[in-house]
Length: 182
Image (cartoon, rainbow, N blue to C red; front, side, top):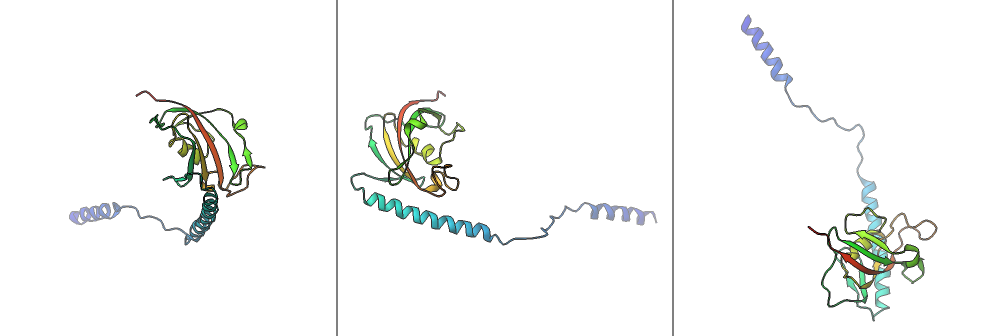
């Protein structure tokens, strides 16, 4: 009888130690919203890319370069002597403007003023295209970037100045680079 009690207690402990099972969702979705959004964004990008390509074709005197980050640029002023580009943590000083692809100024260099930025460390209101573009520049260079909307102001735009999903161009002049001491 005692063995039966011990065996029962052992069986209760053994069955009580099983791992918890994940609960299943009450309602499951198929993920069509995300798929539709991805398709919509691809179509927007293809349309913007076609507009930018046409602009580049109509401006053959500029030597456009395609960046790995998904935008295009050309040098207005290029420094072939200096080889130092900013790296993570370096402090840079620069100016920039934002224009429509047709050249209409949205935000002037004067409105933006002189900008100070720590590469990939400053939580600053800069569009991702400019943050990526600064890493491609040397002190004293001026570069014009052509940004598709996802590298610029994307879905949000600029209130009362720029609508949603509008590609832009920006001319950036990198004034100085202060390297981060290790």
